[in-house]
Amino acid sequence: TGELRELDASDGDIQTMDSVSIRVRSTRQLGIVCTVPALGGALNLQVLAGVTFAVRDTLESLRYFAPADSVLVYYEGDPTIRSDDSWLAGAFSAASDPGTGALTACTDVAGRQGRLFKVDLFFDNTAPNVQLNTAGNIAVGSPIRAFQSVTYKRLQVGSDWYLGFDSLGVASTNQPLIGPLADSLGLRFTYYDSLNTRLTAPYTAAVRRKVARISIALALKTTRPIRRNLSKAAPDTSRVTLEVALRNNRRF
Image (cartoon, rainbow, N blue to C red; front, side, top):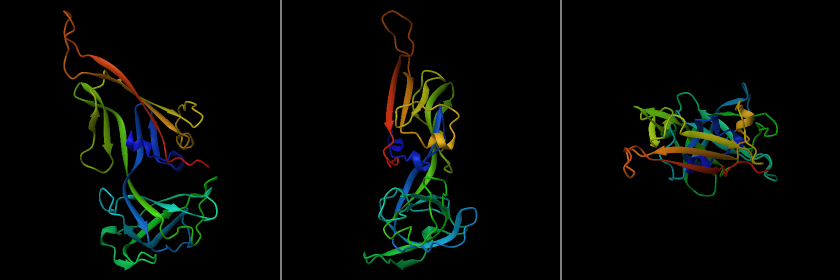
C-alpha cells in the first residue's frame, strides 16, 4: 500500500492494470538538478536527445542512478502558475553511465558539485498537460527521479496462490508477498476515480490516468489445517479489504 499510495496516476505512473494485477512506476532514486539543462533544440518524435545537465545526489536513494533506469524530471514551465507543472519522462542516452559522469561545479548557490547526466527527454504535447521544449522550463533545484517498473499480481506457487511481486529487470522476480490466498479468486483490484465512480475495462491510458483510489480485496487461508471442535481439520479462511488513496495525483 505504501508504494501505491505515492503514485501519480494523472501523470502516467500506472502502466497497466486489471482485476488481478497492476504495474506501476516505483521510485528508486532521487537527485536535484543543479545546473540548468539546455532546452530548445530539435525534437524527433517529441524527444530531445542528449540533454546534458548536472545532478546533485540527495543521498536518500536505495541505490545510485543506473544506465537502464527510466527517469522523471520536474517540469516547471511558467513559474507564475502551477497549472502547467508536471514531469518529463526520459531515459539515459545510449552509452551514458550516470555513475561515471564527470563531477562539475553546480550553478546553484549551494557551492557543491554534481555529476553530469546525459538524458533523452520526451515532451508530452497532449492537452491539457502540454510540455514546451523551451529554455528555462526545467529550473535549478528541480528534482529528478529514477524508477523501476514493478508489478503486483496474482502468483501461483506450487498449488497455492499469493499476492506476488515482480520487479522488471531484476533477477529475483516473482516473489510471493501475501498469502496463501483461499484460491485463484482470492485477489481482486478495483479502481475508482476522484468522484468515487468505479472504473471498468478496457483500462486505456486515459482510464488509468483517472485512478484516485485502489481497493485490494484478499481472501486468505491459514498455511496449516485447523481443527474446530470434532470436525475434520481444514484451513481457516478470512477476508480483508485494503483501500489506498493516491496522494500525488494532480489536483488542478
